[in-house]
Length: 342
Image (cartoon, rainbow, N blue to C red; front, side, top):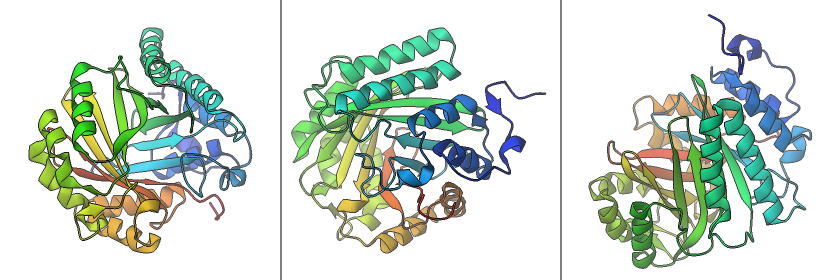
Protein backbone atom coordinates (compact mmCIF):
# COMPACT_ATOMS: atom_id res chain seq x y z
CA UNK A 1 0.00 0.00 0.00
CA UNK A 2 1.43 3.40 -0.98
CA UNK A 3 2.36 5.91 1.71
CA UNK A 4 0.11 8.99 2.02
CA UNK A 5 1.10 11.80 -0.31
CA UNK A 6 2.29 14.03 2.51
CA UNK A 7 4.88 11.52 3.74
CA UNK A 8 8.10 10.80 1.87
CA UNK A 9 8.80 7.05 1.89
CA UNK A 10 11.64 6.03 4.17
CA UNK A 11 13.46 4.37 1.28
CA UNK A 12 13.63 7.68 -0.52
CA UNK A 13 15.73 9.29 2.20
CA UNK A 14 17.96 6.46 3.40
CA UNK A 15 20.82 7.76 1.21
CA UNK A 16 20.42 11.55 1.43
CA UNK A 17 22.47 14.01 -0.55
CA UNK A 18 25.05 16.22 1.14
CA UNK A 19 23.71 18.08 4.17
CA UNK A 20 23.41 21.67 2.97
CA UNK A 21 20.32 23.01 4.74
CA UNK A 22 18.30 22.43 7.90
CA UNK A 23 15.71 20.59 5.79
CA UNK A 24 18.46 18.24 4.55
CA UNK A 25 19.50 17.65 8.16
CA UNK A 26 15.92 16.79 9.15
CA UNK A 27 15.65 14.25 6.30
CA UNK A 28 18.98 12.67 7.20
CA UNK A 29 18.14 12.51 10.92
CA UNK A 30 14.71 10.96 10.30
CA UNK A 31 16.27 8.37 7.98
CA UNK A 32 18.80 7.41 10.65
CA UNK A 33 15.97 7.03 13.17
CA UNK A 34 13.88 5.05 10.65
CA UNK A 35 11.06 7.58 10.77
CA UNK A 36 9.06 8.91 7.81
CA UNK A 37 9.66 12.50 6.76
CA UNK A 38 6.51 14.64 6.50
CA UNK A 39 7.13 16.89 3.53
CA UNK A 40 5.42 19.90 5.06
CA UNK A 41 7.77 19.65 8.08
CA UNK A 42 10.79 19.82 5.76
CA UNK A 43 9.19 22.78 3.99
CA UNK A 44 8.55 24.64 7.25
CA UNK A 45 12.08 24.06 8.51
CA UNK A 46 13.45 25.10 5.13
CA UNK A 47 11.42 28.30 5.26
CA UNK A 48 12.69 29.02 8.78
CA UNK A 49 16.34 28.45 7.84
CA UNK A 50 16.94 28.94 4.09
CA UNK A 51 20.69 29.65 4.40
CA UNK A 52 23.47 27.01 4.36
CA UNK A 53 23.46 24.92 7.51
CA UNK A 54 26.95 25.97 8.63
CA UNK A 55 25.64 29.52 9.08
CA UNK A 56 23.32 28.31 11.86
CA UNK A 57 26.07 27.23 14.26
CA UNK A 58 26.80 30.76 15.50
CA UNK A 59 23.50 32.41 14.58
CA UNK A 60 22.54 34.71 17.50
CA UNK A 61 19.42 33.36 19.15
CA UNK A 62 17.57 33.10 22.46
CA UNK A 63 16.94 29.36 22.34
CA UNK A 64 20.44 27.87 22.60
CA UNK A 65 23.41 29.70 24.09
CA UNK A 66 26.50 29.37 21.86
CA UNK A 67 24.73 27.02 19.46
CA UNK A 68 22.33 26.84 16.53
CA UNK A 69 18.75 28.06 17.01
CA UNK A 70 17.31 24.56 17.19
CA UNK A 71 17.42 21.64 19.61
CA UNK A 72 16.02 18.12 19.65
CA UNK A 73 14.75 16.33 22.73
CA UNK A 74 14.89 12.70 23.86
CA UNK A 75 12.74 11.16 26.60
CA UNK A 76 13.56 7.74 28.00
CA UNK A 77 10.98 5.18 26.94
CA UNK A 78 9.72 7.20 23.96
CA UNK A 79 12.48 6.61 21.41
CA UNK A 80 9.97 6.05 18.58
CA UNK A 81 9.47 9.81 18.11
CA UNK A 82 11.60 12.78 17.08
CA UNK A 83 10.96 16.15 18.74
CA UNK A 84 12.45 19.40 17.51
CA UNK A 85 12.16 23.01 18.72
CA UNK A 86 13.53 25.96 16.78
CA UNK A 87 13.65 29.76 16.78
CA UNK A 88 12.78 31.21 13.36
CA UNK A 89 13.31 34.72 12.13
CA UNK A 90 16.33 36.93 11.59
CA UNK A 91 18.55 38.00 14.47
CA UNK A 92 17.72 41.62 13.57
CA UNK A 93 13.95 41.04 13.91
CA UNK A 94 12.20 42.46 16.96
CA UNK A 95 10.66 39.97 19.43
CA UNK A 96 7.20 40.84 18.10
CA UNK A 97 8.32 40.11 14.53
CA UNK A 98 9.85 36.78 15.60
CA UNK A 99 6.65 35.85 17.40
CA UNK A 100 4.62 36.61 14.29
CA UNK A 101 6.97 34.48 12.15
CA UNK A 102 6.60 31.65 14.66
CA UNK A 103 2.80 31.92 14.52
CA UNK A 104 2.86 31.68 10.72
CA UNK A 105 5.13 28.62 10.70
CA UNK A 106 3.02 26.94 13.38
CA UNK A 107 -0.04 27.54 11.20
CA UNK A 108 1.79 25.99 8.25
CA UNK A 109 2.61 22.91 10.34
CA UNK A 110 -0.95 22.24 11.48
CA UNK A 111 -2.41 23.26 8.11
CA UNK A 112 -0.19 20.76 6.32
CA UNK A 113 -1.14 17.85 8.58
CA UNK A 114 -4.68 18.28 9.91
CA UNK A 115 -8.03 18.84 8.22
CA UNK A 116 -9.36 22.38 8.07
CA UNK A 117 -11.51 22.10 11.19
CA UNK A 118 -8.73 20.73 13.39
CA UNK A 119 -6.07 23.10 12.03
CA UNK A 120 -8.33 26.11 12.50
CA UNK A 121 -9.04 25.16 16.12
CA UNK A 122 -5.32 24.60 16.73
CA UNK A 123 -4.41 27.99 15.31
CA UNK A 124 -7.07 29.73 17.39
CA UNK A 125 -5.94 28.03 20.62
CA UNK A 126 -2.25 28.80 20.04
CA UNK A 127 -2.69 32.37 18.85
CA UNK A 128 -5.04 33.14 21.76
CA UNK A 129 -2.31 32.22 24.24
CA UNK A 130 0.49 33.85 22.24
CA UNK A 131 -1.24 37.21 21.91
CA UNK A 132 -3.62 37.65 24.86
CA UNK A 133 -2.67 38.71 28.39
CA UNK A 134 1.00 37.89 27.88
CA UNK A 135 2.30 41.43 27.71
CA UNK A 136 4.59 42.72 25.02
CA UNK A 137 7.33 40.24 24.00
CA UNK A 138 10.68 41.65 25.07
CA UNK A 139 13.19 38.80 24.90
CA UNK A 140 12.69 36.13 22.25
CA UNK A 141 9.22 36.50 20.76
CA UNK A 142 8.40 32.92 19.75
CA UNK A 143 9.67 29.41 19.08
CA UNK A 144 8.13 26.55 17.09
CA UNK A 145 8.13 22.81 17.85
CA UNK A 146 7.28 19.67 15.90
CA UNK A 147 7.05 15.99 16.74
CA UNK A 148 7.36 13.15 14.20
CA UNK A 149 6.39 9.55 14.97
CA UNK A 150 6.19 6.26 13.12
CA UNK A 151 2.91 7.40 11.59
CA UNK A 152 4.36 10.72 10.41
CA UNK A 153 3.54 14.15 11.80
CA UNK A 154 2.22 13.95 15.36
CA UNK A 155 2.28 17.36 17.06
CA UNK A 156 2.93 21.06 16.51
CA UNK A 157 3.88 23.48 19.26
CA UNK A 158 4.00 27.26 19.53
CA UNK A 159 6.05 28.93 22.28
CA UNK A 160 5.59 32.57 23.23
CA UNK A 161 6.50 35.12 25.90
CA UNK A 162 4.73 35.06 29.25
CA UNK A 163 5.49 38.05 31.44
CA UNK A 164 2.27 38.95 33.27
CA UNK A 165 -0.38 37.21 35.37
CA UNK A 166 -1.75 33.78 34.45
CA UNK A 167 -3.54 34.36 31.11
CA UNK A 168 -7.32 34.21 31.07
CA UNK A 169 -7.32 31.50 28.38
CA UNK A 170 -5.61 29.03 30.75
CA UNK A 171 -7.97 26.38 32.22
CA UNK A 172 -8.88 27.03 35.86
CA UNK A 173 -7.35 23.79 37.12
CA UNK A 174 -3.99 24.63 35.55
CA UNK A 175 -4.16 28.26 36.67
CA UNK A 176 -4.73 27.17 40.28
CA UNK A 177 -1.66 24.91 40.23
CA UNK A 178 0.53 27.64 38.69
CA UNK A 179 -0.67 30.16 41.29
CA UNK A 180 0.22 27.66 44.03
CA UNK A 181 3.71 27.20 42.57
CA UNK A 182 4.28 30.96 42.28
CA UNK A 183 3.27 31.51 45.91
CA UNK A 184 5.21 28.59 47.41
CA UNK A 185 8.50 28.25 45.47
CA UNK A 186 11.02 31.01 46.29
CA UNK A 187 12.23 33.03 43.31
CA UNK A 188 9.75 31.62 40.79
CA UNK A 189 8.78 33.98 37.93
CA UNK A 190 6.89 33.62 34.61
CA UNK A 191 9.09 32.65 31.67
CA UNK A 192 7.12 31.54 28.59
CA UNK A 193 4.04 29.61 27.49
CA UNK A 194 3.30 26.99 24.86
CA UNK A 195 0.38 25.41 23.07
CA UNK A 196 0.82 21.88 21.70
CA UNK A 197 -1.69 20.53 19.20
CA UNK A 198 -2.36 17.02 17.91
CA UNK A 199 -5.28 15.77 15.85
CA UNK A 200 -7.15 15.00 19.07
CA UNK A 201 -6.63 18.04 21.27
CA UNK A 202 -4.64 21.16 22.15
CA UNK A 203 -3.00 21.75 25.53
CA UNK A 204 -1.44 24.83 27.10
CA UNK A 205 1.74 24.72 29.21
CA UNK A 206 3.14 27.50 31.40
CA UNK A 207 6.89 27.65 32.15
CA UNK A 208 8.44 29.35 35.17
CA UNK A 209 12.08 30.15 35.96
CA UNK A 210 13.47 29.83 39.48
CA UNK A 211 15.72 32.79 40.25
CA UNK A 212 16.73 31.29 43.59
CA UNK A 213 18.44 28.07 44.61
CA UNK A 214 15.95 25.26 44.01
CA UNK A 215 15.28 22.10 46.01
CA UNK A 216 12.74 19.46 45.08
CA UNK A 217 10.93 19.64 48.42
CA UNK A 218 9.71 23.16 47.56
CA UNK A 219 7.54 21.49 44.90
CA UNK A 220 5.39 19.74 47.52
CA UNK A 221 2.50 22.28 47.63
CA UNK A 222 2.26 22.41 43.81
CA UNK A 223 2.50 18.62 43.57
CA UNK A 224 -0.29 18.25 46.13
CA UNK A 225 -2.43 20.72 44.17
CA UNK A 226 -1.70 18.69 41.00
CA UNK A 227 -2.38 15.31 42.58
CA UNK A 228 1.21 14.33 41.78
CA UNK A 229 2.78 14.21 45.23
CA UNK A 230 3.14 10.41 45.02
CA UNK A 231 5.45 10.84 42.02
CA UNK A 232 7.77 13.41 43.62
CA UNK A 233 10.22 10.96 45.31
CA UNK A 234 10.89 9.19 42.01
CA UNK A 235 11.37 12.49 40.19
CA UNK A 236 13.81 13.67 42.86
CA UNK A 237 15.77 10.42 42.47
CA UNK A 238 16.02 10.90 38.69
CA UNK A 239 17.37 14.45 39.05
CA UNK A 240 19.70 13.80 41.99
CA UNK A 241 22.84 13.10 39.85
CA UNK A 242 22.59 16.61 38.42
CA UNK A 243 22.01 18.53 41.66
CA UNK A 244 24.57 19.88 44.12
CA UNK A 245 24.92 17.27 46.86
CA UNK A 246 22.04 15.50 45.14
CA UNK A 247 19.57 18.06 46.44
CA UNK A 248 20.02 21.67 45.25
CA UNK A 249 20.10 23.37 41.84
CA UNK A 250 21.86 26.77 41.57
CA UNK A 251 19.82 29.93 41.14
CA UNK A 252 18.66 30.55 37.58
CA UNK A 253 19.15 26.92 36.52
CA UNK A 254 15.67 25.47 37.03
CA UNK A 255 12.61 25.74 34.79
CA UNK A 256 9.34 24.30 36.12
CA UNK A 257 6.32 23.89 33.87
CA UNK A 258 2.75 22.63 34.16
CA UNK A 259 0.30 21.39 31.53
CA UNK A 260 -3.34 20.38 31.78
CA UNK A 261 -3.92 17.19 29.78
CA UNK A 262 -6.86 14.76 29.56
CA UNK A 263 -5.00 12.55 32.07
CA UNK A 264 -4.61 15.42 34.55
CA UNK A 265 -1.97 17.99 35.42
CA UNK A 266 1.54 17.16 34.23
CA UNK A 267 4.72 18.78 35.57
CA UNK A 268 8.24 19.06 34.16
CA UNK A 269 11.32 20.06 36.13
CA UNK A 270 14.21 20.97 33.84
CA UNK A 271 17.80 22.07 34.54
CA UNK A 272 19.68 24.42 32.21
CA UNK A 273 23.09 22.86 31.60
CA UNK A 274 24.88 26.19 31.17
CA UNK A 275 23.78 27.24 34.69
CA UNK A 276 24.90 24.03 36.41
CA UNK A 277 28.33 23.81 38.00
CA UNK A 278 29.17 20.65 36.05
CA UNK A 279 31.64 20.29 33.17
CA UNK A 280 30.01 19.38 29.84
CA UNK A 281 31.73 15.99 29.50
CA UNK A 282 30.95 15.06 33.11
CA UNK A 283 27.32 16.11 32.66
CA UNK A 284 27.10 14.07 29.45
CA UNK A 285 28.47 10.98 31.18
CA UNK A 286 25.94 11.35 34.00
CA UNK A 287 23.12 11.55 31.47
CA UNK A 288 24.33 8.35 29.79
CA UNK A 289 24.59 6.56 33.14
CA UNK A 290 21.11 7.73 34.15
CA UNK A 291 19.64 6.64 30.80
CA UNK A 292 21.11 3.18 31.31
CA UNK A 293 18.94 2.71 34.40
CA UNK A 294 15.88 2.77 32.10
CA UNK A 295 15.17 -0.41 30.15
CA UNK A 296 16.72 -0.01 26.65
CA UNK A 297 17.08 3.76 27.07
CA UNK A 298 20.88 3.84 27.22
CA UNK A 299 21.38 2.21 23.86
CA UNK A 300 18.49 4.13 22.29
CA UNK A 301 19.91 7.42 23.57
CA UNK A 302 23.31 6.67 22.04
CA UNK A 303 21.72 5.96 18.64
CA UNK A 304 19.62 9.11 18.88
CA UNK A 305 22.58 11.39 19.72
CA UNK A 306 24.54 10.01 16.76
CA UNK A 307 21.52 10.37 14.47
CA UNK A 308 21.10 14.11 15.10
CA UNK A 309 24.82 14.82 14.61
CA UNK A 310 25.75 15.57 18.22
CA UNK A 311 27.80 14.05 21.04
CA UNK A 312 26.83 13.19 24.60
CA UNK A 313 28.63 16.38 25.73
CA UNK A 314 26.26 18.64 23.75
CA UNK A 315 23.45 18.60 26.32
CA UNK A 316 21.51 21.85 26.79
CA UNK A 317 18.80 20.79 29.26
CA UNK A 318 18.14 17.81 31.56
CA UNK A 319 14.74 17.21 33.09
CA UNK A 320 12.02 14.89 34.31
CA UNK A 321 8.40 14.64 33.24
CA UNK A 322 6.04 13.93 36.16
CA UNK A 323 2.67 12.37 35.28
CA UNK A 324 -0.14 10.60 37.11
CA UNK A 325 -0.03 7.30 35.24
CA UNK A 326 3.69 6.49 35.21
CA UNK A 327 6.97 7.01 36.98
CA UNK A 328 9.15 9.99 36.10
CA UNK A 329 11.10 9.74 32.85
CA UNK A 330 14.41 11.48 32.26
CA UNK A 331 14.58 13.75 29.22
CA UNK A 332 17.32 15.81 27.59
CA UNK A 333 17.57 18.57 24.98
CA UNK A 334 20.58 18.42 22.67
CA UNK A 335 21.65 20.61 19.75
CA UNK A 336 23.41 19.23 16.66
CA UNK A 337 26.84 20.65 15.87
CA UNK A 338 26.86 21.98 12.32
CA UNK A 339 30.53 22.96 12.59
CA UNK A 340 31.41 19.26 12.56
CA UNK A 341 31.13 16.80 9.67
CA UNK A 342 27.50 15.67 9.36
